[in-house]
Image 1 (tube, rainbow, N blue to C red):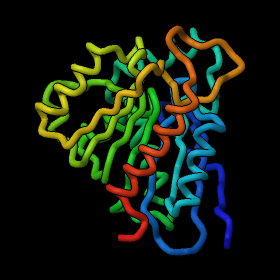
Image 2 (image 1 turned 180 degrees about the horizontal axis):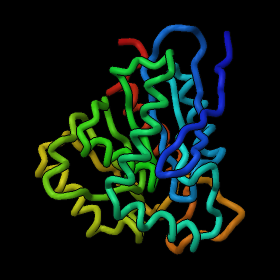
Image 3 (image 1 turned 90 degrees about the horizontal axis):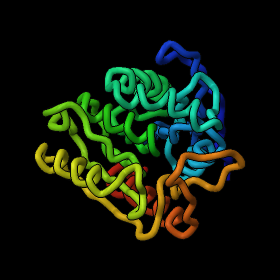
Image 4 (image 1 turned 45 degrees about the vertical axis):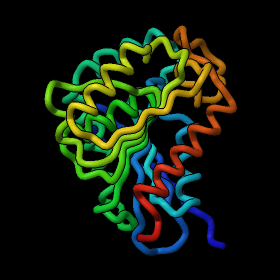
Length: 241
């Protein structure tokens, strides 16, 4: 069996030189593709491994960059970068569109069959692509129950799946309610999975640097959330169609 291939891709977004990770499945034919957005700390080996795993399942996968090739281990620096970004849909969409352009330009990509899967800030960017009317097959987010500008959720043209930890203080029940109300009012085909006992970023393996309060790994739910994402793609973006 031919192994997957990977390469670094460089592009510009948000005024920064971005460095993404592209993973390609074996073969030479066009395949469905997945845009993978990282947590607010930025692109790391966690997302690169997820892209590789999706390539092994037959998808073209691009894990995109948030911070110009940097990983923001310092919580204060991360928040200083991400909070203004999350408050600016235009900037988020710009980052998402730049990465999407790279993914579409890959010859192996079936440009009519693309999904966005994101975590934290990366998930918020995926949702903003949907609110911008981008043609996606599905949007999946983990701990990114962000709401958009009034009325724009009606532009979402695909199912939306969201996962969140029940004990996540950042995506607290009031935020969950606002997100699901937005999706419901817009007529979106949406689902929300609440993982009991899990904190924010429960899917992300432990790190060797400080984290913001309310963040914590939950190994069992991390595995479940990944299986749920893979199942979502199998349903909405099957490799063979």
